[in-house]
Length: 404
Image (spheres, helix red, strand yellow):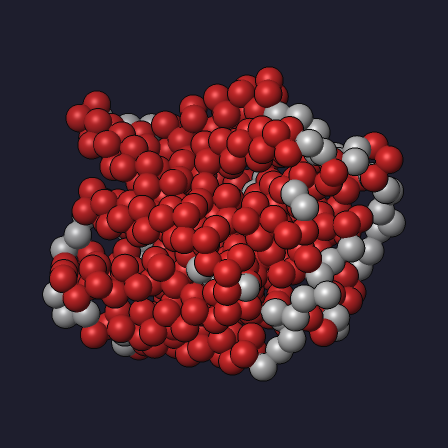
């Protein structure tokens, strides 16, 4: 079985899945900073900007468990390839959109095919040993960070080029989405050529049709897995509020356009890469997943509360540094602990449900953030900090870090 594959084979598979996810997330990193600015060009309100981010997560919430369970039945590779192809097509629709409703349709389409990340987590679970599981999950976190470095930088450059080429879609700022589409579809071709299947045929099992709510509540009732899923949900809810309103916040308070905002996003990505690609791999074997998760949640909660009190660029830079480090220390140990507490045959389904809960947080977060932003520009960040602190308390009082 792949779990006992030779070390070099596992490393080569991890490298391939890392590159696949990285290229996919470069395209995603192009779209995230672009969406609020492009939506504002179509006269979207801050609340509508939040809803544009929410619609992606609505679709991902509905479809991520389906893709996860399907990958347990037919294998990881075909599901990842379907996700890449569908994502590339959604970016094309986004690039050629000429109205706000079309932008919403494109992001919903992207969410439908957004289950490849949870499948990539299951892929890593297939090819790693239990003691290296969280390190492997950290590679996905590093891919996120790298995607958020190169994606925004590429998107900013393409946006500038697109404005020189014209003002109507797919030119202007929309040209960045066209670049994301080309990149994602090229990634599909590459993955189809080099990505191997990680789940042996004898380990696959047909999965009966289950009620979605029952599936979620089943795992939430499990003492360790359930508490870790709630932590994942709360941290995702907090992160979604921050992401949705940070771009309007820096535009309103500091006058930042897409280029400066993308540079700031890239800076956060650099720190995420350092944290998840290096520091996490050193700290978790030494201190354990639970302790690192507590550090991450604590730093993340504090940084969120500090955002509205960052009255100049330098204070904001310090705050975002703490945010990036805290965020970088949350996801890998959280997912690693969930994976370690789950049966091997349930990896895809459990991680799919986990990512669905994170998607639920990203559904509610932007809408809540948009509403609170109308009340007070600092309110979304204060409330997000409170949610992250609640997640910290849950981990502190749980048995999440216990090892068999």
